[in-house]
Length: 218
Image (tube, rainbow, N blue to C red; front, side, top):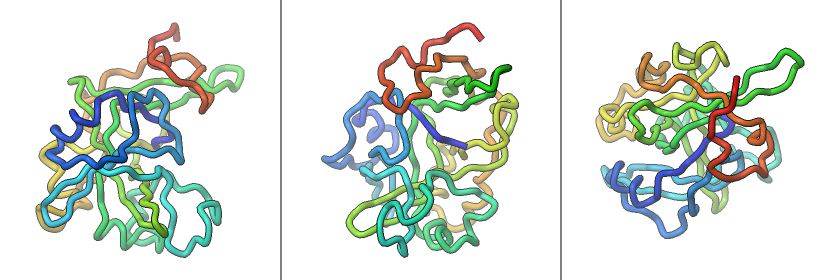
């Protein structure tokens, strides 16, 4: 599952990495506490032309009459994304990539407190999170696809975001034919650094700054 993430790589670097044309309305970074409903940079592909675009994190189905007409949808489960009415058209025709420098997950302490952990790739590169998007009125909105947790999650949660490897980007973006469903799987062991315990300051959606990803004693 993915409920908060960071994006510390500059937009110019993301555009170069994904070979995408950047939009002029991308969010200014770095952001060490990306929260639902924030504007995020998203990679899409149209006839092979990739774009880095601004979208609202929080998928709004077409039948919503207002953004808060139903639950806030930030994740879509891999096992139901192709059958749920809210997602099935998007996963066929509007797949995208959400770049992230890292993400947070929480464990429960002895006293029931929420203890945050930070995950990042071992190679220091941005993560390419699998996403689906939907235009609602004049706003483009996105959800991150989740799957069953693999070894990288270290037992902290039973779900994890689908992280795509570079070789799989064309298939997920619809540039390499059909069959993208096979990509919705846990990340292989060793791709991520071991999770790092960080300050509970990140539990607030108003928290900001690089100190949020600094290790603290577990």
